[in-house]
Amino acid sequence: MEKARQPTHAGSWYTDNPTKLSSDLEEWLSATGLVKSPDVRGVIAPHAGYSYSGRAAAYAFANIDPTNISRIFLLGPSHHFYTPKCALSTATVYKTPIGDLPVDVEMIKEIRAMGKFGMMDLRVDEAEHSMEMHLPYLAKVFEGHDVKVVPILVGAVSAENEAMYGELLAKYVDDPKNFFSVSSDFCHWGSRFNYMHYDNTHGAIHKSIEALDKKGMDIIETGDPDAFKKYLLEFDNTICGRHPISIFLHMIKHSSSKIKINFLRYEQSSQCQTMRDSSVSYASAAAKLES
Image 1 (tube, rainbow, N blue to C red):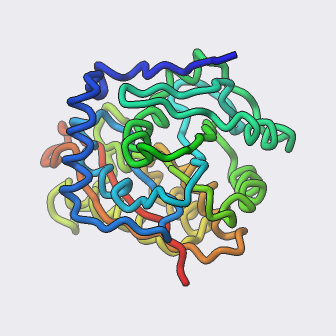
Image 2 (image 1 turned 120 degrees about the vertical axis):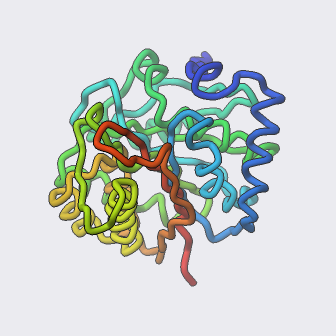
């Protein structure tokens, strides 16, 4: 029986008009000027409302060549529901205004049988925006292709368990039919986020934020999950997808494929000048197979 996850953020976080959504996505994708590559096996992309991060996200999704991919693993942080684990979706299909993405129920069963994953009910699934904000882009890029999704909600996972989940999922990286869509925004800066790290040697506040984010992005590009963990402990940067990113780094580390992450775009929702300002940063990356 079909159990559909509705696009609950359509009409607020992004348009629910299929024609408008489709043309927006096409415009943003072509504006990147990027060439699709069959070697791109994953992306890290933001999940804010499209008016904020839609254009930045295109720099991740425009790299995807959908030809040989038949399964997309979604890794998104949990913003509202507390779990110390990773949780799998109970839905059978993820709806978007521009086409539906069936859930790979068999793969969900296979992963569940590992005994380390929880399940999230539909209410939790629909309340969370981190994976939903990737879906219209994926529906657009994979239009006309037979593809299924494997949604994994990543909770407040300990460093040990990030490594454990990374090792369990690493084997899926080696199958070239699998693709990974990792959801994260970068620094959430300002009093409303309880985070106001400022190093004035960089000049303006927004320059300090950029330097902090770029430091983290550089470390992610090395592929070293332990260095990323150390960076987070030192600066406590409010990267909301820190756990999905860490698990992805462990997956790459434990796979036999040589995959390199490269960031292609960095933006801020606004440029902070004073301590009263606030901003969220968006960074887009492609994870590419190195020959």
